[in-house]
Structure formats: structure tokens, C-alpha cells
Image (tube, rainbow, N blue to C red):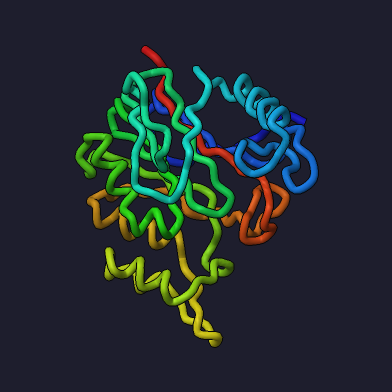
Length: 246
């Protein structure tokens, strides 16, 4: 079986290329079966390397994706820099060749493209990253007016399965009061959080009007997606974006 993926359904310029991988078509075993692309989750390094190799050619990647060391922060890696800092949770490029990559297993991958096809970016957004301002940092790094950007919210945990404590609601509301509407209280005093809604609210507050995606729940689809909330130890899928060279 070959690796498979979905492509964003958004009106990006033809030069913008993007995909979000599914968990099938790789060589990893057990809880990592089978297309695990994360090298930090305990899988055999040789299996991860083979999975990444298997994805590259069919996807037409122009280069090896830049794999970040994600930690729920707001740092952004500029892949056009001579030596980009990889301890980041977002990446941007304005050149043909570099591939921005985000690894997830319930957190949201978000993609950005400017309407002229001259800049793209990707961000890793769980609740901590959203509260820290990772989306705002990515837009600033792109250097494009928000009204000229389009955004795509990729597969992540859906609002029926993402239970959090009151401290999460408070942290999100502290930096974005409108975030309170994305939490539904449960009888046990905890909350169900709508992560895609939290992301959309922040994108809208930045000034991005054209927002797509946010329809796929990783927790609900065991056959296609890894989910840390559902399975605990598991693999990671990747969401990639790049510009065709010219």
C-alpha cells in the first residue's frame, strides 16, 4: 500500500502545494502502524526514515521537509534564513523549495498562503500554542496583510472528544475573551473544548476572512489518523506546505 493523504480544499494559487498525511502506507508496527512520520515518539528510527522516504516521491516534495522541534510555543522558523531555528511551532517560506512541516496527533495543523502565491506558512496549534499566540506570530512572520491571506485548519481533535479542565478555559480566555464560547461545561465540572472554533476565532481577530477546513476529527477516525487522546502512545501525521519553484 502506498502512502495516502488529503489535500486542502481551499482556493490557494496554483504555485502553492500542500497535503496532510494519513496513517496508512508505511512500515511502522504496533501503536505506530503504519505511516508514522514522527521521530520523537519512540518508533524505530529506521522505520520513520523509510516512512518519510516513501512519502517524498509520490507527493512530489522538492526537498526534505524541515522537521521542527515542537513544544507548544509561539516561535516561528523562517526557512529562508541560512540557519533557521528549529525549536519552533510554526514555519514560513517565500521561496520555492523549502517544505514547511507540522506533526500532529490531535493538535491542529494550520496552513497559510497569500493570495499571490508568494508566501506560505504552517503552524502547530494546540490550546497552549493558541493561547501563546502562535497564529499571530506566524502571520507577523509572513509579512503579509491578513486580508490577503487564506487559512486552512487541518485534521485535529473534534469538540465531542476534547475534554479539558477549567484552567484551560481560563488560559484561553485570558488572551482572547471570545474563546469562552468555544467551551461547553460538563456535569463533572470539566469542559468540552472546540479547538477548531478557538483557532477560527483567533484567525478572525487577526483579520483573516477566508478560512477553510476544520471538518476532520482525528479522534473519531482510527483507520486514518493517529490520536494521542484516544490511544496514548501513537504515531504522528504530517501536514506540509511549499511553493513550486520558478
